[in-house]
Image 1 (cartoon, rainbow, N blue to C red):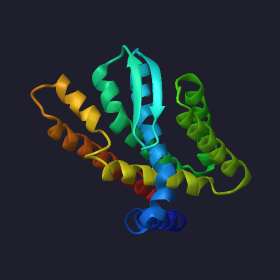
Image 2: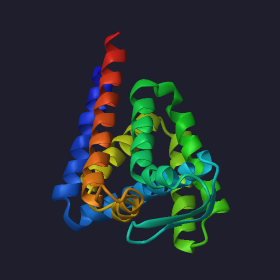
Image 3: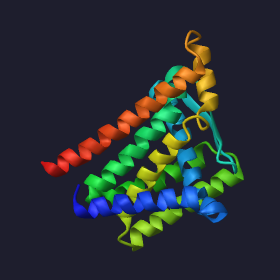
Length: 218
């Protein structure tokens, strides 16, 4: 990696692990919006899975405890269920990659994220808390990208911190999805799928890191 990118990554890792494991209640409060953002990625993964397999989204919720629920109609249920955990990891890796390797597109990527959050709030969300979070978070990202030069750092932080949180939360975050997935494939229990999904996410992250390093070397 370039020195600048490496320093940003190390800084993000320091902030993330410092706040998560040593920040106490203050760290939890600071990380709370990130947890809600990861929930947004997770639920958006479900919604995207429904849409790309021919279904539709009926409702999209983000709760105060950082849980979420996406109700859909039609589509491929296996893809929709996997879309939450695997899809959010793909999206997080994409944000991290753009920030690390395509710095000139970081501002545009943040604008796209902001727009998607506003669009989701307008189309599918009914709950006032979820609408408030999506709108405020989206506006905050938009203003930071427009009036500062922190686009790369913001995008890399959102992507990398989301990936780390997804991996860390592998046995809690997708529990309901895993149970439903096990019902579809009755011969394989939820605990097995939990580790299958975790391995996929970890391998995806390793592959992304290798891509970033390889492109820099070239």
